[in-house]
Picture 1 (cartoon, rainbow, N blue to C red):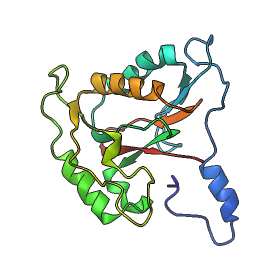
Picture 2: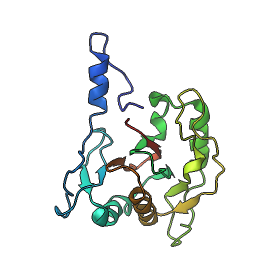
Picture 3: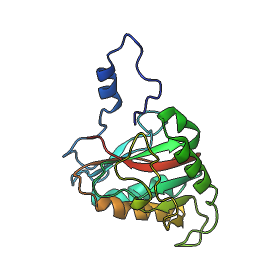
Picture 4: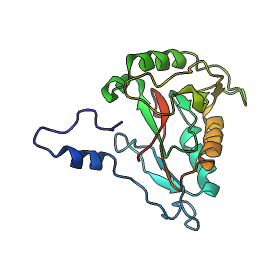
Length: 200
């Protein structure tokens, strides 16, 4: 899914516009922005491809946990977070009020909206207030179809997590990736969903 919901103007080259929309913020082999000593493995983009304020940074696996905790421990919004399977190379965030602009099917929008209603009780790990419903990877169709609902198993057993605990869960999931480089986005102070994706 493109971050530009409007598409190119009639006189613009669509292929060039698409290349620009998917231009990577990070490169394989780029050093970690936090320690400078190791190869960066996870690029963290709080701007969601320039849509919001923030400074993207790339972290090695050793620095990843503290980096994600800085983004998530002060989390004000709520989100459904689908665990990324090892084959995905990006984790993309969408606010619930913009899902139709990005061509999510109505079935998926209804599912996400329903799932968000359950968030706000105690974190299943530390008993702080939850901000996230964490769903396993098999909650969605790994093929990410455009013409069928993505959420094929929304009733999969999930966990309600606070910001700090979801940062820990994401750290473990990202470290298990089969990819040399991941590009991941972080939730905003709103309601939304964080779903795995591929840039291949």
